[in-house]
Amino acid sequence: MSTRLSNAQIAWRAAQDIEDGAYVNLGIGFPEMVARFQPPGRQAIFHTENGILNFGEAPPEGEEDWDLINAGKRAVTLRPGAAFFHHADSFAMVRGGHLDVAILGTYEVAENGDLANWSTGPKGVPAVGGAMDLVHGAKRVAVITDHVTKDGRPKLVQRCSLPLTGVGCVTRVYTSLAVIDIENQRFVLREKLPQLSLDELQAMTGAELVVPDSIGALIAPEI
Amino acid sequence: MDKTVDSLATAVARVEDGMVVMIGGFGGAGAPIELIHALIDRFVATGSPGKLTVVNNNAGNGRIGIAAMIDAGMVAKMVCSFPRSSDPRAFTERYQAGEIALELVPQGTLAERIRAGGAGIPAFYTPSSYGTDLAVGKPVAEFDGRMYVQERWLKADVALIKAELADRQGNLTYRKAARNFSPLMAAAAGFTVVQATRVVEPGSIDAEQVITPGLFVDAIVEVANPQQEEALIRAGVAYP
Image (cartoon, rainbow over all chains, first blue to last red; front, side, top):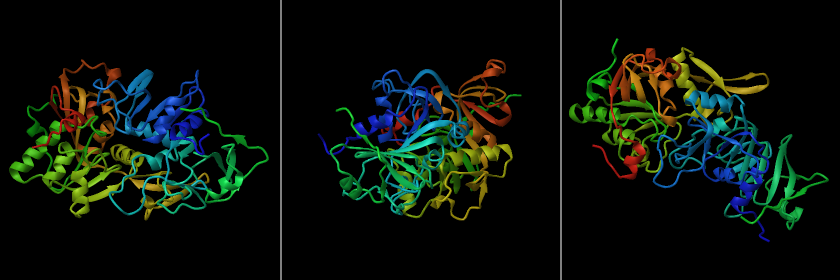
């Protein structure tokens, strides 16, 4: 058994918590993968910032319509019941709390719910897109991420060191090692890989984990 | 009443040096490529209009459209949410050389500032950006126990947008996700210029289907078979 979940397996785990008929925004990149793993019999309705509800898979290559793209500028298709709307309506859906779930990637997430996912510092051209709106946009704001950075540093920290996207906005974190809720400004462990000890997990986490009496086993299918 | 004009050059004639110009589109969807290129043609021929402030979600891609405006040296400042793209060279080079200013705005705040500009609302409060670097220096206030940032309206001298159908009075429909910022910009600009894929007679668009009422539109030019920014970029096209 692998010592960590793959990105696809993290996305699979996040998808298990999305209810049938939920209105969902998936951040650009890794979070888009969540759409592939909806449990049988459930169909979420996906929102994209540039003005589509209920878009579907990418079309076959060569059949792209470049007026039909998602926020990542990738060609998409429409599902039955889709709707177009302008940008102010789109962000009314976001800021107005009308989405059920937003799932975002991150550089850092802190135990107080702060999220840093838009800038790695002053180098280069800054670009924020819809990230600062989406973090305030949904009833649940979840993050999917590797538990540690490529060089092994914790991505779950006491306080973010990178520029913030939003304060106190994240409610759940799905990582390559665990599922963790943010409650009362603490990381509360809900599930972990069965083969991983609590001490090992804590050592890879930059803030104290609250461990309830009962925690679940994080088990994802081979994908 | 007939708001159509007979050429792209006439359509963009109102843009002058130093103006704020809103340009519709999100990536390639809704980018009014022909209007932008007509503006570049005039700049290349006459040296005007320059020193423009351009409002768009992005800051150009490849060597066409807004990127070509930046390459031509017409743009002094970009107001946008995401100045990156598959080929952001034009903006990136000028920005790193200190030759173009950037006002970075969260995307939803950008949309709402433009909406507010068109609606006569000088300022509003939003949760977006509270506690972040993009809120520094802005007034904040608490409402019902939560903190919000004050943002101001955004208006333009001219808007350049792309529509699917336009009737001669300026009633517009859009194609798919090419709608994005355009209805907001049409309202927020003092003078709104539309390139429409097809111009029809008043009454030809069902009143129930009109997305932008003609009141917000000042000039219309028909551009049948408009170029698509994404297709041009994939083909490696440069303008001029």
